[in-house]
Image (cartoon, rainbow, N blue to C red; front, side, top):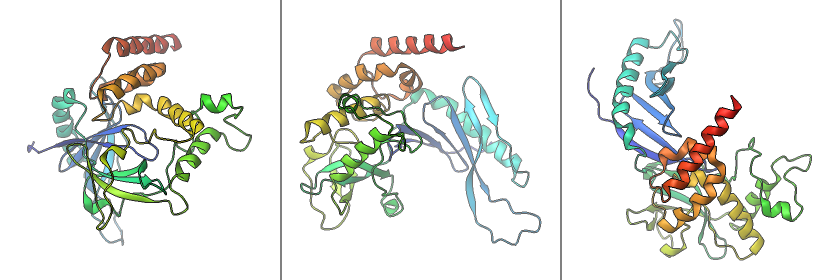
Length: 307
């Protein structure tokens, strides 16, 4: 096999925030993982053309070749026979061999330094992170849709503070009422014009505006999490706190969290022991190892009892 240079990096999964994706990429193949255990193997290949194809050549694309984990090995998916299957197998095998050598270095460093923030209509301070990308030439391509709390088919966010106020999570029409209320609350900060702006995150944690003439923002105004915890209304603060608690296992995957913030999130995250067990390999730091290890043991017991 011809040796390749591989890039190891991670990118945040945003809008909705679903943790951090690990990427191991070479010239002809790449591997993607959201938990550091199961990796989707994708191989770069020419778009297959039929024997009598009259479509113009559309270039190379990444195609899913299979899923790999250190314990189970490669489980290949069905491949179109019009692909150059032998070349795809060689690329996948080389990628997996090199990935196995570096998997102990997880999590990979973050690469999505460009950030699109929803801004408060009045103070123009950052409210919620909408999108991120690796390079400045990707800014126009990035999805700048309105902020989303959870996938449309995900009804699992339940806010204790809204339940205390008598607001059920389903009204017979909408099975994700609490997520909808949170989305309206966050989006409302942006006003009718839905103010937003791109910034480049610097190595020191500061942010530089990307657009000419864009005003500088006080570094202290940027939230430490993908959503601000600064809300004037007490009920809004409680609602956002409920959301942060729900996302705590995923938030612990973020790089650059201050020690006191990580210390605050860990005891909240362990209430979702099975999620912590799935994601802990991607935590850049762990403040209380005993606490997280106890949660992992609890998750394994629960899993065993279901069998």
